[in-house]
Image 1 (cartoon, helix red, strand yellow):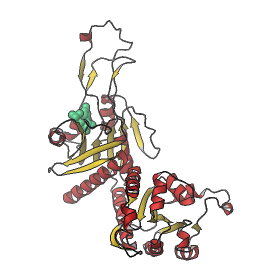
Image 2 (cartoon, protein in one colour; image 1 turned 135 degrees about the vertical axis):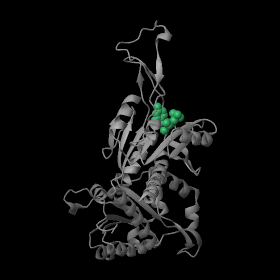
Image 3 (cartoon, rainbow, N blue to C red; image 1 turned 180 degrees about the vertical axis):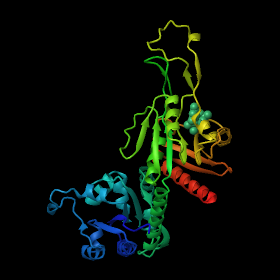
Image 4 (cartoon, rainbow, N blue to C red; image 1 turned 90 degrees about the horizontal axis):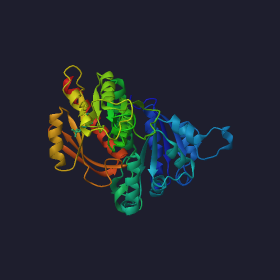
Length: 408
Ligand code: C5P
């Protein structure tokens, strides 16, 4: 059921395992998926266009600029058509090309131009896989948000043994079946999530404000990832420089009070994630005109902003089914965050150590520990905020579905 009518675009790379992609096409079609195939120049050395088109019942795409296409741009139309893009096999060379953003043929251009989920299925010799360059590319590609299926351990076509063997067509099928099953389930259940992110600005007068350095990137990436997984997501963001994707529902706010009002408008919600670095203090009065420098400092009165996470945690009527907080700490990070999780009545706390350089605030990188109420922790080592978002989102969705099962 989950693969029925799903549009799968398969890119066949140039490796000995390319022949297995034919089996995959057959398996997908038996499940009711519609398959289109892009055959790379080196892929053509291992499988023929004729065998693919006979199996897929569709034209095989090979050329970047096809004159017979009446001006249609394949790399855009194919990537918009697909529900999912699979690269089978993903060779070391193709991974390297994607890692540096190369786009010199139809396959790589489709991937670069895509707005869809992309799964790479690597296949190569064990030494090629273990080579630092490939491992660096793997890290890079994960950071860009590509997902990987395999490789497995086993005997290779060259006779050597180790990691690098391509996952079998059945393993690939089960992986993507799982992906769509979860997505369809979340869509069917119409799961809703709100995410607060970015800083808030608390104005004293028309030009001065209290704020912080938060870039809002982690919350934004998390919102993108959750909606990709099938959750109806709204991002409530403080002022940031992010150029938000049109695919995401975003409510822009300035102050903590505005953020709280937007959150209230969205209740009830199934999942709430408070990733915003809400300014802790705000002036009691916002002056309409610029405050003169000779003002007595004691005349500027400040008060605490509302704590949105605690408000949600203690909300008897509308407490979200799953409530997630973020915790930035400089020492005893896990211990202090665990305490904070209980203090703010949330279910999961994502902790990061802001004493470390190049991660967290205003950076594209982060390093976090996911802490659950039962004390279970999961550390995610330094990676891009996109990658970290994908791990957190997966955890949140899994936890949510487990809780739902327990209730029903
Ligand atoms: O107490 P602290 O600011 O360290 O707590 C951080 C967590 O609380 C984050 O999830 C943040 O979004 C949330 N928070 C909030 N409203 C505030 C302050 C923090 O929702 N006024």
